[in-house]
Amino acid sequence: MSETAVRIFDIMACNVYWDFDGSPLPREQHKFLVSFYPTKGVPTPELVERIVARGPGGYEVEFTNQLFTPSNTDGYIYDRTLDYYWYMVNLSTGFMPEGEYTIEVTCTSGEVLTRSRTQRQEPAEALVGAYRDNRQRMLDSFTPSGHGRLPEGTGLTGLRCSWATLRELAGQDAYYIYRLAEGGSAREFDTQNLTWWDNIFMQRIGGGDLTAGLNRDGVTVAEGLEPDTTYAYFVEVTDSNVQGETNICVFQPHQVFTTPRTATSRGS
Image 1: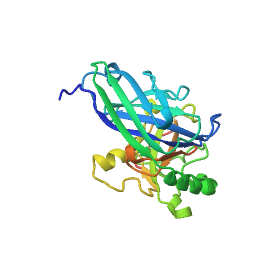
Image 2: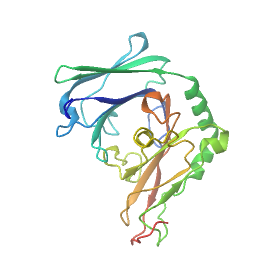
Image 3: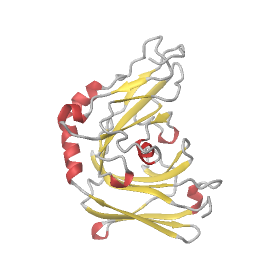
C-alpha cells in the first residue's frame, strides 16, 4: 500500500458535555471525528473528497473540508507531533441517541472508506452525572489556575499540573486528556497549535499502556515553556482511552496561568 493512501486510524461518534467558560453554546452536544494515518508527502485534506456521518433514523451530517477553528467547529486539524490529520464536527443540537453510527470517507481517487461504532448512553449518563455533582470541587482542585502568574523561580521545563479526579470525589472511573496552548481564554486557545498534549490514545495503541489516562490526576508538561507568556489548558474527561469506544467527552473550563518573567532551567 502506498504511503500516500488514505487510511482511517479511528473514529469518534459520541456525546459532548461542553462546559467551556463564556461559551454561548449549550452544554449537551455531540460530535463526529475521524483520524487518519499519515499520508507522506501529501496533506490528507488534498486526498479527501467528502466525509459524511450517518446514524439512526436517517441522520446524516457532512464534514466541511476546511481548517477547523473555535468559531466554525467543523473541519480538519493537523497534529504536527505525529504528522497526521483528523477531522471533527461539533453539533450543538443535544446528545445523540443510542445506536450505530458510520463515518464514510470518499477519497479523490474514488475509493470509499467506512468505519462504524455503537453509541451507548449508560456510561455517558453516569460520567456526566458524577461531573455535574462534583463540578465545583473539580474546578477548585486545578493547579495552576486562577489567571495568576507563576512565582518567580518556577521552572519552565517539567511544569506539573494537577487536579482531583471523579474517582476520588465520586468513585467514578474516567480517563483524562490534558491539552496546553498559548492564550488567555477558551477563545484564544488554538487547537491547531498546541504547545503539548497528553495523548492517551497513542499511549494505549502505540505504547501498549492499556490504562493510559485512567483516573490520571496530573501531568508533567514535556515541552519547555516561554517566559512571560500566558497559557491556557483544559482537561477533557472521557469514558475510554480508545477513540472508537468513547461514548462521552466532558470539556472542562480552561485554566489559565502566566509564566515567570525570567526563565529557570529546572521544573517546579
